[in-house]
Every structure is written in C-alpha cells, then in structure tokens.
Length: 281
Image: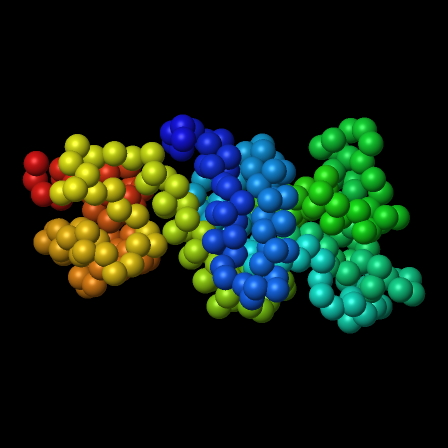
C-alpha cells in the first residue's frame, strides 16, 4: 500500500471488507446483500470521495459512519418503508398524489422527497454535463450502480458537511441528515468503527525501528498488552487515562495531545518518533 499521507490516498485504501466492518455485523440472511453493496461502494465511491475532498480521517469517518447508519449497515440503498409517511409533505416538495411512495428514501444517505430528487438532478448535471437522468422523472435510478454513490456525495457536499466533520461534530451532522437526533447512538458507534478502521489503515503504512518493543498501535485494538505499555508511558507523561489494554477514544486523544505537545504529527498512532519521545530515546 502506498503512503496514506497523500490527500487522495485514504479513500482509495477503502476495500469492500472495510465497508463491511464499518457497517458492523449483520444477520446471516442479510450478509450477502451487505457484501454486494459494499462492493458497489468500493468500486464507485473512493474516486468521488477524493474528488470532493472527503479524504481526511475525520471527514472519511463521519461520512462513512453516517452512510452505514442510513443504509442499515450497508444492507439496503432503498428505504424499507413504503414512503407513504411522506405523502403530502410540502417541505419535501411532495405536492402530488403518490409522491410519498414515489420519492421515498433512496441511496446510501436516503435522498427523500421530490424537491431533493429535482435538486440532485440539477446539481449532478452541473458536475457531469451530458447524459444524466432526470431523477424526478425516474426516481428509481437513484439506486442504480452508476448513480447511487453520487446521491450520497451530493447531499454531503451541498450541506457542507466536511466543515462539521473537521470539527468532529456528529450531532450537527446528524441533525442536517435526519432533522433531529434519530439513531444518534448507532451513528456514534458506526463513526467510532470508521475511526478505528481508518486508524488501522493509516497504521499499516507506519514502521518503527523495533516493532516488538515499540509497536505501531492504533485505535480499535482491545485487550492488548502492547497497548498497556503505551498507556503506561502516556500516564508517565501525565495523561489521565487508565491502563487497560483497550485503545479507545481516550487513549487516542491522550496520544494526540502528547504528540502535539512534542511537535509531532498528531495522528493518534504510535510511530517511531512518538515512541522516541515517550521513552526519551
């Protein structure tokens, strides 16, 4: 794998398996659908993420975590409900009979309502002058392989959600996507899974002079004696964390804080320079 320090490299490191792990475990009868959808995302989404600068760790984590929740752990790109609940919703542009069902939630981020389908068409035709469907006339095409990832990119970009992701503001992002706090706990879990996967990807390109004594460690590792060693050294430098072998958000924050204080890149990953600073070598 090439270095993930380049701006466009992180999205292109996302595999179908990574998407599945971010989504989380699913019942056996839905596993096949999750894997199919993860493969579609793997083929079409990374290039678009790089193009629209969803390429920094926090941006990628929040984007994929929200998509995982909205798509039921990547098991569906179409809302399970009929959409009848949206009938007559003028705020969604559903002014004609049957609009609720016709413009039900579709795509990894659940594009919903006639107005949003119309706006998606207008926006995408500006991005891709040429043969772009009219999704207001053919709403089912939002879930086709060619356009399904574009629908998620559209919503993220027009709502300037990179800005909120840079601030790690999951509540504000959730409110824009859903209009409230619906599913917030699950969204937090999935963004956390995404952060752990991203840390693992970033760590895979790092090395240390002595990988046994000074290993590359990252968020998501659990019940790991090597993490206990890292936590011990962080507490020696005043970090208010426990020594439990679990590399969670608190350990990541403590490591980033230490790295920043020492003038190192605050990656939250224990590379060689970090270990040198920790143990005084």
